[in-house]
Structure formats: structure tokens, C-alpha cells
Length: 76
Image 1 (cartoon, rainbow, N blue to C red):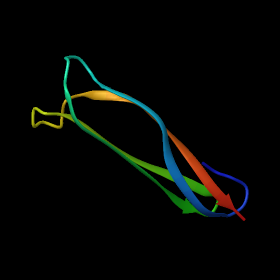
Image 2: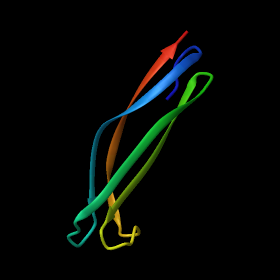
Image 3: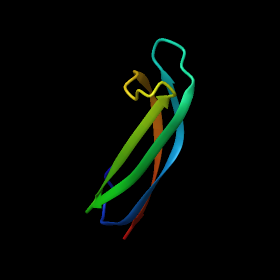
């Protein structure tokens, strides 16, 4: 995300998400979503990490989805 003028600070919030396993039925054991923002001049870079796992002990089961992130930035 870019704006005109220097950015003083930026924060992120998860606005919505829709995540699910591909293929077979799985029972969800844990779901973790982390997001933050890095500010560099007039640019905000959003970092996002997501983990979705079942109780099988494997974290490599294929999954997919969408995560929408809201960015709130303070400019000069």
C-alpha cells in the first residue's frame, strides 16, 4: 500500500477470513493467523502468517482460503 506523504505509523487488523481444507473432511485442532505492518517512507508492507492444522499430527495437509487485512495508517 502506498500513500502520498510520509507515514508515521501503521497497524493491521484481520477484517475477515475463510479457510478450509482441500479434499477430505478434517477436524480442526488449531488455527493461527498473525499480521503486522512495516513502514518505509510512503509504503506500508503487510506481513501475514497463517497455520491451519488438524489433530493428525501433520501440518502439511493442503488447505486454502482468503484472509482480508485492514490497514490503518497515520500520515504527516
